[in-house]
Length: 162
Image 1 (cartoon, helix red, strand yellow):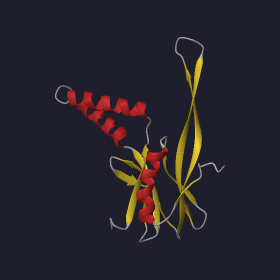
Image 2 (cartoon, one colour):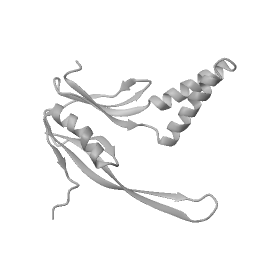
Image 3 (tube, one colour):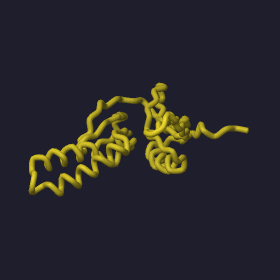
């Protein structure tokens, strides 16, 4: 039943580098469809596999079940878990640090950014990760729909009390 469930997509299972290569492989596969059919089919299959892979969470509030899933070729796989009730949705922040090494020198650069993670907390204390974004406003916009559907508050733990 569509009206009783919500699907929250977490994001792609592959980093942007692979998504870019998948898009290039898709274009090359289409270009080679008549000259090298077998190679073209393999490239198209691999690129659609990469481009269609994502993860997410489905929550069915009528049956009180949720499913954390991975999707390939638009086919979702994951185990359904029963829950009693939902307590809240909360947001935490985390620091992401990446070190990049130069190809021509021995120097490296460190980049630090902040990422915001949304979690769903059930009445029994179980917590599941919903979605992450680097932009807090975009994350809150996504969570407003989920919060309204589930009738639970969004608690922002990133706000520092003065």
